[in-house]
Amino acid sequence: MTIVRADDWPQWLGPNRDGEWQETGILEKFPPGGPKVVWKVKTGQGYGGPAVTQGKVFFGDRILTDKDGKQDTSIRSGTKGVERMLCLDQKTGEQLWKHEYTIEYKISYGAGPRCTPTVDGDRVYMLGAMGDLNCYNVADGKVLWSKNFLKDYDAKLNIWGFAAHPLVDGDKLICLVGGSEERLVVAFDKKTGEELWTSQSLMADAGYSAPVIYDFGGRRTLVIWHSRAAIGLDPEMGKRLWSYPWQIKFGLTAPMPKKIGADQLFLTAFYDGPVMLKIGSESTPSEVWKPVSKGEKPGQTAGIQSIMPTPYLKDGHIYGVCSYGELRCISAKTGERLWETRKPVVGTPTEEGKETRWGNAFLTPNGDRFFLFNEQGELIIAKLSPKGYEEIDRAKILAPTNKMAGRLTVWCHPAYAGKCLFVKNDEEMVCVDLAK
Image (tube, rainbow, N blue to C red; front, side, top):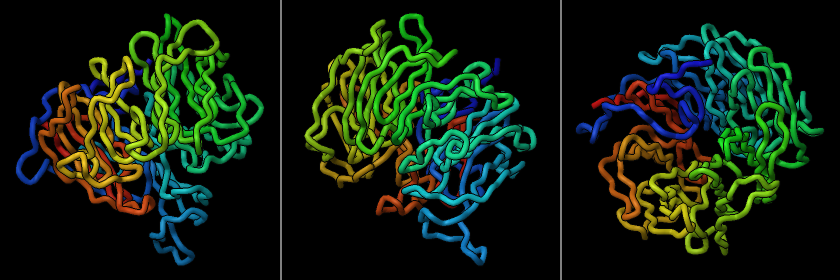
């Protein structure tokens, strides 16, 4: 069993894959001029956030080059480049090792890999945007085994590439592969790469949601949300336990399913809205509530319709960023919306602020507060309650550099470890001190 410290961030959404930052001794407000930058290093493009553990920082990026070997800044798919996995010293930012391979992206928004590395003991796993899965030795970056989902599993290439962060469960590495012939989901032996089981088929875009395991009624359940359904599998053998058919427009299943209470599961999608399911012994979960949206515009949406960030549950209420940059609070019991504000995403003081399609901010709870990292590279400290949004402080951390959304953004999920923030844009990664 791998021991993970509370001040580590070894995978997508932290130690327990729940998005919670549990460290204490964190500052209440930022010092004048913003928090101290411990170090910064140059990086390539990429949407994937870092993993931080064992005194090391792990992340993937992509360097684009033209025929003369100069960096290509057009950020277009169809160009050849180098996809990389890098390991840095957590304290200094010094590069400890890297592994790189040439690759041609054939996807939309082709600005680098999407996944956060998954670190497990002496191994780290990274899934690239074109389906390259590599297992590395943590100490020196040696490739211990590798797979390519397109070549090895006849997987269908998603519109926006491969983005479902691999999950370690015991001796298994579980991946949303998207392959044919009962190979939508594959469990590999995490040490050798040998297939342990395969499950389900889908001749379509598999979607982007990370696998996650929850306990429902005393039964460990692997939840997979793909573009045609949310399904529950036995994580030991891959046998399907239940299925909720739901065809998602453009396969936009990026937010991770969240367990609510003892037996409910919350899902949210940009175009198709939210649904609260009750998971029981039946083969099809029942709907607790499912509000009907009239469209994607703010006045047409119901509940929370997220594009990327995974919403968070606190004291019977769900907080999340909706389709046009609105931070919303809804009742987990009924789905009723209690309030919304665009201030954390676009920085405006009122709800009548600028509508920002796909506007984004990542929510991370710490104690009784939230840290919100928004797409403009700002870090915000705020309190969220059913009464409303209370901003405590904000500071500029990074410049938005990605142009793919028609405006400059930074869409990388941050990591919080060692009382520091670790986050990158398409040009650099920074480590910022958040200690009291």
